[in-house]
Image (cartoon, rainbow, N blue to C red; front, top):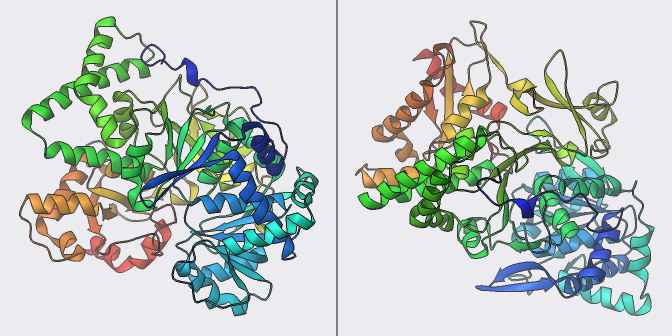
Length: 619
């Protein structure tokens, strides 16, 4: 692909960037090597504040020593209940530097879930972000006899709090400074005692099929994998990255925090989830990793903005993206790009495409990375037409993140790439299930030996539950989850994710669940994009009083029917969607229908909306 973009400076580096076979060893080596260079940045009261490696190291040492002064020791577990903030990273590294186990809890989890996760992980120290998260902890504290202390990051609104078992992070750091005066080498000794085989982190699965399971990852597995990442999506200390996905999810923990620790790339923290579009334009990351929901949102934002632009602006964009698509098609086919077409592309960028990239905030991006859920191939091609390669990676909590990936010199939309250099991947000859083996694979589920045994084949391969295919070049493609494949009443096997991805390419649809197992035809439950559908309603004088009335408006129903009709034209008659239902409730990560990464839970949707689904088959 270098015939279009100069990618020589982003080819994977195979050499070791940073020594250390445990995360504490790697971190403290980084502090010594990088000193006053900036590592972390956050926006506070409208001003960006930088943390150097040395400042980060001082904070981690004080937090670790403070924990030690409370009797926290190697083998203990601490949990972090917070949004993605710098304190999350500092406390995580402090816990690991004590030789202890670090566990993350989604900030959207209810108090009952906090109780289960703390109890299952035997949490003795719980970090919480603010008064909202503290309330959850206090609600279940009496049911957690092993919980010794709760540490609060942000004490705003808690000035009058007087509780012997609750202290602020500032107070913990003060305890740490006192402890270091008496034991100056306490943290150094504890960090040095950590071994590669020691348990480092717990990452709980989202629990879409029962209670969450705590996946156990060791220091050796994490450091091995983070080195492997640099053979796939290379970064260095000149890179600017964004940290905004949940840090308790394996994607941001590995691809954000630990990968930045290893490579020295700067981590920029967004103000909050709602400011991501604004912050990305300020940061202009050179490497941008996100989930498909984010990439879909950016695309739909551009689509809506174009509808408000002048006829000339729309014409210029149409010409420019057309040129980009011509080049992208040649590059994807492995064909040379004529000099004349390259020249037209430079003009197209100057006239339109660079403005689109700046509108999104990807004008400095060398490449984009997408993962955690399937993405529409058309969306990958659109970003490619803008001149920015989008690389899809695939993996799961149990594989420590990416197990396959698309490399920058060979993009195949619709594919999850080849097996990475650091693990093996195969297809089960009978079921077509994708299976993985390597040092990156987790050590099992905490307290669940039987579930762990079920997850592995007799010869030691991880059963991923994803069904796929592999082509002659070694590129894998996910066809669906084993449990999600639909077999219609007529015996036709259908992979719903293909239809769902096509639907989500529309700026008016955020998510979709196609249903039809043992049924005569397919139906779909759809979650509309509130902002874009509201804009449609306003532009077309469609009356509505609230979200529910918006979804029921005949004009909105017709809008979505039009999207479905367009998608149906791409599929055989037996694979087409006959009816649909629009969710009439605004869902957030707090709602049970959504996973923490904002994906609809298929089984829960089918159960909760069974009456509406049945009605679509009676109509």
